[in-house]
Every structure is written in C-alpha cells, then in structure tokens.
Image (tube, one colour):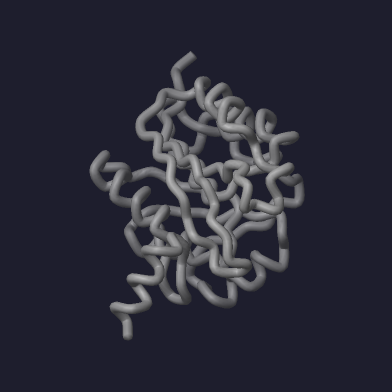
Length: 191
C-alpha cells in the first residue's frame, strides 16, 4: 500500500498526506550536497508539511503565509515547526541580507512578481539560495491569465546567478489537469 502511495506521489509531484513534496525533497538534496547549514524561509506554506520536513532534515526553517487560517491549521498539524503569519503580505520583517535560503512554490501572480522577487532578494544574504517555481500557461490551465509568461520569468530570474533550471509537467488531481512548471534554484548575485 505504501509503495502505491509513493508511486502516485511521484506522478503527481505533490505531497500526499504525511509526505513532503518532491520539490522539497529535491531542495533538501541540493542543500545537503552544498553542506548548507543556514535558515530557510518557506513563503506560502500550504499544509505546512514542507516546513516541518525541512526541520526534520536538520534545517532551521520558518514557514510564512499571508493566510492566517493556513498558519493555524499548520500549527495544529505540525506543532513543533515554526510558522508565522505575515500581516504585511509580501513585505517581510527580515532584515536586509539576513536570510540564507527561501523556498517558494507556485509563484504565479504576474502583477506582483517583480516586487516580490525584489523583496526576497533584499532579504537574501550574498550567495543566498532561492528555490522558486512558476506555473506556466497551458491550454489545459483554466487560470492561465494569472500565470507569468516564460520569457518574463527568464528576465526576472536573470537578476540571480543560475544554479539549476528545470521544466516539467505535473498531473494535478483536483481538478484533473496537467500543469507546466518552471523551477529554479538560484543564488543572489553580489551586486
């Protein structure tokens, strides 16, 4: 039974109950290869499972979300993990150049993308690491108008030093659809 759940997870690419997302697992693998030992901030926590997974892997991690209900639910599900509500939206309370890494999934609001990335960049230490995913428009995507075009994403990400770029499709189960995803691991340039 457990083997079937994990196979389904691989196909969906997202987390099943009790399992972190494949994306979080890939990021942890990268961080361990880099001998990373700093603080991670996850922006947009979903259920909170990835924040808790980072903690269990030995990293100091803070999960931040603008949705206070998500924070409340995550604190109930993962009481040992550190979750914080952001009442300022994407205006982070972290000092300039104080964060070692950010983990951001489903970054897809084009009208706010540049401002959000500038805020993340402001908080990242020199050579700080950003894991970020964008949903790309597709003919099967009913929300295509809210997604960012790939050319614009590439321009935004050019303000960082590219470590890894991955483009793939993921099957979403509810509603059933394929999502095109563009994923980056980048570091903050020193300029």
